[in-house]
Length: 111
Length: 120
Image 1 (tube, rainbow over the protein chains, first blue to last red):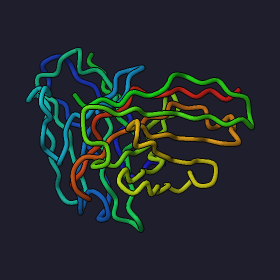
Image 2 (image 1 turned 135 degrees about the horizontal axis):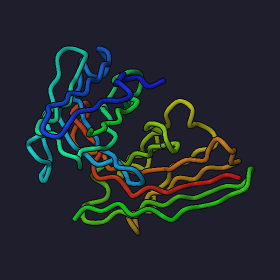
Image 3 (image 1 turned 90 degrees about the vertical axis):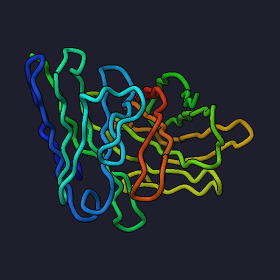
Image 4 (image 1 turned 180 degrees about the vertical axis):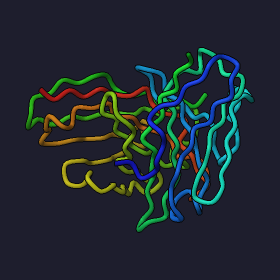
């Protein structure tokens, strides 16, 4: 059971806008930045969004992140077939000594 | 460029030990903490803990105490994960990842390519 809650799956057609939600609590998303990672089958996770809404160099501006209270969202506009992957949200949790917490992952299918 | 390169796949028998290495390059080693993350194939990401690359002090997540040891060799800018008394349920892909930014405003980047450990 993951600390952050994501829908297990999402889908959209090419060109569509898709959002993936990530729900947490006051000790993680409510207090700290949210990061998103993209993972293709057989490869390592790759940073997609950091600091809630910042794109690393090379990440298309079709990807955007936001946060409100204890929930966060990843939006993908102009969906492309190559966006089909697993997406994970993550945040630092201030419980006890602190720990990284992840969502269970959302498998995005481009129909 | 910043790189984390992990050691290759391992196949071990139950009860054995395994050492996974994470060789870093392209940045000052002792400035950024290193984290270890486990992923059972087909499942999500599970944080195992982190090691302070300046002091060498490790912090283990719940469920990863006792049989799991994080260590460093600063002379070769490499971090290690040792798992002892291996069990079938330790079969997974293990990733190292650099921690960037300040507490609460940090992220993991980059990640090593992963090391698959099979216990059978």
